[in-house]
Amino acid sequence: MKESKSLLRLSVFVLFTPLLSLYSNSVLPENPKPLNINHSKIYEKQYIGFKVWLDCNQGGAIAFYYPLDKDTGNTSRRHISFKKDKSVPKQCQPSSGKTYRVSLAGNTNSVIKNMRWDRGHLVPANHLDGNPQALRETFFVTNILPQNAYFNRSQGAWRYTEIISECYREITPLSIWGGVIWGNDSSNDYFTNTHGIKTPDYWWKLIYRHDKKQFVAWIFPNNATASKSRIDEYLVSLKELKLRLQFIPNLGELEQLPETNTTPKKSWEVKRKGRNLLCENQLASIG
Image (tube, rainbow, N blue to C red; front, side):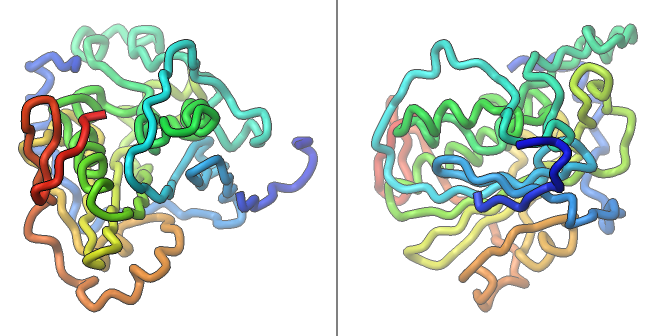
């Protein structure tokens, strides 16, 4: 696609413990100030099995959606690299697929240099490993943003949302939406020069189960306080979620649920049973 054309709307752990003190008082503001989003600059891209919406003013994804059913594959991700999507205008995606290393971004402060940031997947590769091409497409930088490593990895809340999805997909089809809130905190924008992208201040996710017509939703700060053990602190109602977001895709039948003003009391429970996951007496692989 030539850049001269107007944008088309296609249908298309590594944590150093001392760093926790930096975030000890980090909570979602009661009324976060949204940035003005020009919806004409939202570029919708359909991939195999998932969709992303890209904020071309920010240069990266602002939302995603994918349906999730029973796990049917385990395609290896070896030799798959992060790369730009040539079919997407360059101003709508990060300029590099290289690692987010704060030290390489020119920071000399010793505490900041020791922070770890991941190339965080919006749509997890593991959930699309039943199709080799879909798996590869999750590694486009259109599906990647700077994400705090602790938040993203085994003890982090974001990773735990993926575990929840991994288990409950064996019980019922799921619909999963998510994205980021860019926010106004410039103190974590380490990668504007190296990747042409700011660091989103918050990540959000919404999981809807079709059998019981129930949902669970969270808004997480993009830092080390967002741990698995604290995940319930970030639960929100559908109404609150929509009020806080700068952009949200159409949620389909979920919009009609009567309990959209109600915040779930707790996140859906998942236990470990040997090398498997257990939820509602259903075993699932860890993935």
